[in-house]
Image (cartoon, rainbow, N blue to C red; front, side, top):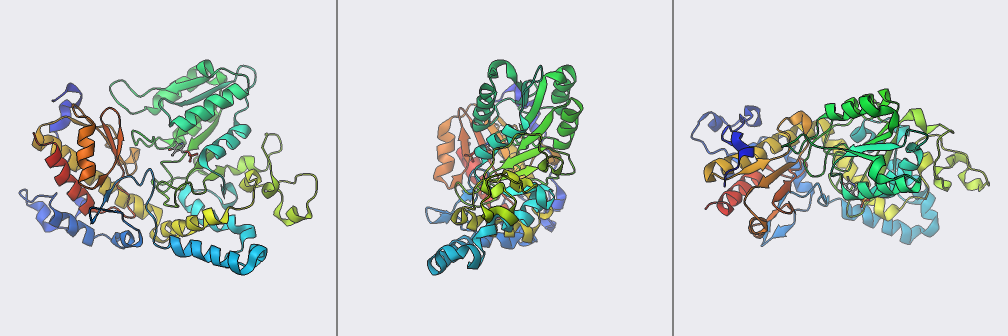
Length: 452
Ligand SMILES: *Cc1c(COP(=O)(O)O)cnc(C)c1O
């Protein structure tokens, strides 16, 4: 079942010794995938306490090995109280809750500014929590995709998340263009699933005067590749194009510095790594260079109007002059209540520390997959970059020669992962709540499921 593409599989990458203080590691006979060893790593971890603050689903009475936090993050235990507070305030105050609720609803969205700045590397007036992700993408495209003359094209990655593909194609058609010619997709290097930033630069150098916008996923949802967003923004700007990112798989996962990277705009959802609940409020970043501009189009509503005069209900729009100018409607408080406590967990743990733990969990999971390939002599191709600078907390693996029955076997044993036909498994070891023990348990299950 071996195939050429993983000829290097026998060379198992060096295990990162900083992962554990356990002295048994120095013993070459020690099984680093034993439950005992994993528990030891968990008990030495400074962020171990956060797992207890989440509800871990049970499968067959046992805690699930939940690797789909990149699809729907788990529920913080503080979520219920946060929602109840809003329901109680609504019961108690009715409309007066806008001013008298525990967290007054009239400026409820301001609760998220600090957390979003921490997560995105933005200035406070550059971020806003609003709407849903694809909606925000469209609203930002209204402002930053303005095809004119020869400059009509959008550059994106091949196999972008379907919603983004639909959004881009429909925006191009909306402006009278043709997605067949106006959407340029950057393909991964042959034989890999990874995009080389140099290939993006090459297109921008060659035909930059035709490109209006570069819009990419900061972390690719399938491969888990983290792009060099600063480099891409720089080359987009050199070509005279805007540069935006969809951060659905990046926010809360990798460290972002959108302001310093000079990114023009970005949007994200909050139900993946941010754990804010199904369909929870999304967010947007607009670089301060653009927030006060009057020369770019924007769809407007009353919550983008200068807050000081919002309730004067005057007929003409006066912009907030910040990212909030893109905000249209009053805050969906019940939807947002969980977002606030979910972001607090990030502020408490700190994103850099979470990233560091995420790197160790991801390296351990990758090592577990290589170990299973080696022990069972099977072809498991990890398509996520091995370099921790080029990925977040995700490992995508192609199980050559296997089909859905492998995935079903894993699911039966309590592994919650994501399956893509014909044979890809995506797993996200989330540093807030996944443990080294989760990965050791997965190793044993995977080893058994692929033993011939
Ligand atoms: C998850 C995801 C979406 C989902 O869009 P919604 O509008 O939240 O339904 C869109 N784009 C990307 C890249 C995603 O990863």
